[in-house]
Length: 312
Ligand SMILES: Nc1ncnc2c1ncn2[C@@H]1O[C@H](COP(=O)(O)OP(=O)(O)O)[C@@H](O)[C@H]1O
Ligand SMILES: [Mg+2]
Image 1: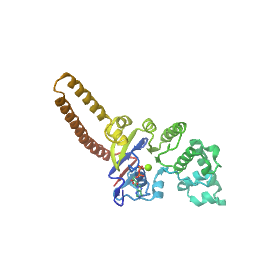
Image 2: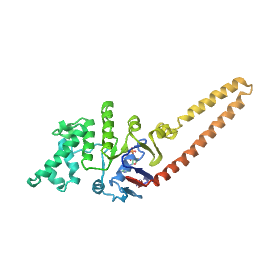
Image 3: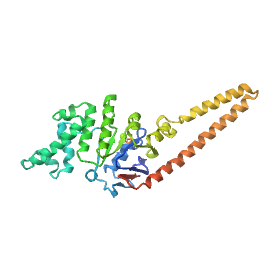
Image 4: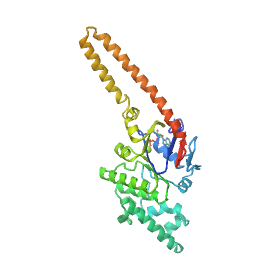
């Protein structure tokens, strides 16, 4: 995906299997939200396609929703002056033949459909813990509850895949914990979840697999354990140098100092250790490149995919 001269997402090949919770992490500006926007048809990728259950999706948001992909937004997008219940009813309109206006205008011919819709919407509100606030205006909800309402509204379209863009941003630890439980419960309903989040504890507790996006490219993808232990991920978040390297450099310095103490020729020993450390850094750089392309290749070969996005 390119914006003028800026390539926000480049050749990201990514698969979410049914029954999985997958995390998408990466520094600010890495292209995570842009990737979601490509998946959901808000942006038309400059190149590449999005497939869901084996079918390529047209880049049109309502068709993507109809196909079974729902999302929440990093910047909450609710109907602020509608009630909590009405917001969820709006989310259901893709699944009711009466459509959006009947949900809002309540024509006399639609009472039964409306009652069914309302019952389903109330079920969802209970599921996210907002049933007691059904008649509150969305804008009067605390921030954390607005995020949960967005999730309820997304679920109202009965998705097979739910995309969450920073669902715990602005939440306190207690709210974050309940959101974690909520995501597990969503997965237990049989919905696959792809979640962007900066809270690493949240991500690594929750996700079966995690992909790391840096400057629009997928740096690494794997289980939580593998990604957590990957020095490139730490580097991407903390900036250079790699976490392991200061340790190595320190160890080299200590060795050099000890060697210097033991030998009369201290200068030569220190020089030799320095160049050794530099070689190590160069080696780990080239290893990174090889690993990254390996991961991308194997992802491309996966077959039983729920959804698969490739965007450039
Ligand atoms: N509509 C747009 N027009 C131009 N540039 C954009 C647009 N959307 C995102 N970008 C740029 O693309 C890059 C990735 O942004 P984004 O996907 O929001 O990152 P993230 O969600 O990982 O923080 C940023 O440099 C951002 O400024
Ligand atoms: Mg974002």
